[in-house]
Image (cartoon, rainbow, N blue to C red; front, top):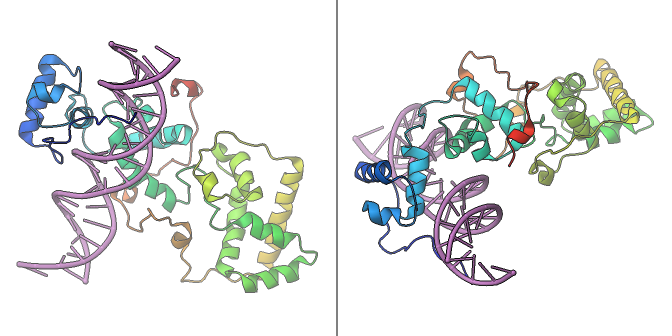
Length: 283
DNA sequence: AAGCCGATCAACCGCAATGTT
DNA sequence: CAACATTGCGGTTGATCGGCT
């Protein structure tokens, strides 16, 4: 059957809106209301597609839109909501009065997402990014060696010593995670390497580690301590760049003004209020 | 001064969901 | 119930701007 075009392409203007066009749209909607977007441009005397008019109105001209920088509180809210809802920008926008889904989406992609990446947080799963290190397979293979010390020495000669060193530094922190990440995400990361396809899916449910998993985790940590105390692993080299390990195609080393500020971000803290009801956000 | 480059964000596109006939 | 129209949404693009060389 085929989809009919949303508007006649011939004679329809595209690109940035002029002040005159904006005024025509505002005047028309003030008098008639939005109504049918398909017929609106003709009635309003605009050479625009109805879809373009709707977008211009909802994202820019609407009187209740709040312009300007996102406040720190707004950013925190976006991060928290995104950790629950994922890329449901319109749903997130309903919790931020005066902000449009488009505005929030843009701000996420240009600021917040990069900030999370630089902080070692996967912006999709909101979990610490260990995927690039693939610690679980690396360490798992290492600790299954009967002669761990020689195996570690051997491995350190084969693998980037900075990565191994980083692993030893991270593990104590991983054992004392933020409540948001308690036991589920981190242990899962350690037990199962994160694949790119998994990263693209929001983590809808968590798993509870078994006693067996916990004990193996402790064993791994104890052995890492042994390795560290025996100076098997050299210190991080000066040229070692964590950023390069954590970087993604969208990441940028440039600092943005928000994180350069003095605010002590608590975006690692995803403690939701007790009256937080997830269903309120879902359709 | 001119050119390059990265960041930003308004606007577009395609698709899915929903409504109407 | 099918076909079509309309609306909403999320991903992507491209124009613009500012900083840097």
